[in-house]
Structure formats: C-alpha cells, structure tokens
Image (cartoon, rainbow, N blue to C red):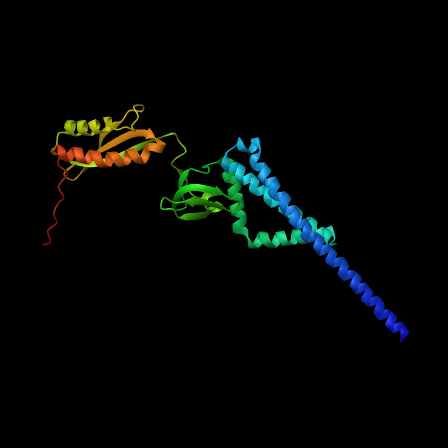
Length: 272
C-alpha cells in the first residue's frame, strides 16, 4: 500500500514538473514572439530609412521589404518551435512535407509570387503609374508578393493577381514623359479642306499645353459617307494629357460651328 502511494506521489511530481516545464516554455515562447515581432518591426522600419533602399524604385523597395519581413517571421517561428523542444530534424521534415502540400494546394498563389518576382525584374510599371491590364485600369498603389493593387479614377480599389498581370498585355500610360492627343472629326466633303485645317490649327495654336516639338498635325486620314475624317495630333507632357484632350474636344467643334462648317449628313433609312 505504501509503495503504491509512493508511486502515485512520484507520478504526480513528474506530472507537476512536466507541466511547470511546459508552462515555462510556453511563457518563454510567447515572450520571444512578442520581443521578436518588436525587433522585426524595428528592422523593417530601419530598412525604410536606409539610403540604399531610398535610392532605388519604390516598387523594388516595397517588394524587398515584404520579402525580408516574411523571411524573418519564418525564422522567428522556427526558433520558437525549437525552443519548445521539438527536434530540428522533425521540424525540417515537417516544413518539407508542409511545403510540398502547400505547393500542390497553392499552385496559383505560387505562380502569383513568381509573377511578382518577374514584375520586379522586368519592371513594366512602378508604383504611381497609370496602367491598364487584365481588363482593369488605374493607378498602381502597391505591388505585394501575390497581388498588385490599383486605384481606379472613380476611387475603387482593385487587386489583380501578379500571375494574371504577367500573362496579360500591360499598357502603361504614364511611364513616358510625353504623350500624343489624337482626336478625329468628321466634316462634310463639300467643305474647303484648307479652311477646315486652318480653323483646327488656329485652335491648337492657342492651346497652353501643346508642345511645338514634335509639331502638331492636322491631317485628312479617312473617308466617311458624305465627308472626310480630319485627325488632330498634338503632343503634350503626359501630366497635361487630359487637360489638352478636354480643351480641344470643346474648342475645335465650337470653332467649326462658328465658321458654319457642316458635318456629313446622316442617311435616312426608308422601310419599303
């Protein structure tokens, strides 16, 4: 009887010691996670102040920062698991197994990560550029590991997978310093073409945003039923594109109307 009591006492003592040991390790793990997260945040903030990162493009800097943050948290978690007494060989085997499973389950996500890396290398656009791709368009706000976030002109936020972007045609409308405004006007064929061209050229000459080099052009570019299509081409700074576009769309038709220039008549269909 006494031996049984001693055995029970030893068992309780072992359980108590084990519980205390596990409790201490858990508390220590929590403390390490809190301290480690604080240090990681400090490192990331410090990276943001580094001259080497400030000297490169915002897109590349953000991508590098996100990658370093992700890697540091992986190291922190593995360190905590090792502290809890799990053999590193088991941890490595588990990570490998989980990596394979995640790789199979998240093939799309991995392709997006690969797409993000390709975007960083080839740089078809940067943060702040206005692009159209994947059926969407807007200003590039962020390029993360998986998604590129756009803000549309009506202030909607759109997240496009990086894999989709790398497999799409990307139109970057702000990357170049200059941009050309192209406008088309249909004029009746009976009108004097020299007069029409002069009216359009006079409007262009008064524009505050047009550039002289390359020189503006007014050309007859096509024929339409009952008339001709006149194309106006004006080079401007990219930042002035919409100002010039709106001004010419308003002022050229007004000048044509004032001069009495006719438009092609629309044929009337008669049902027989």
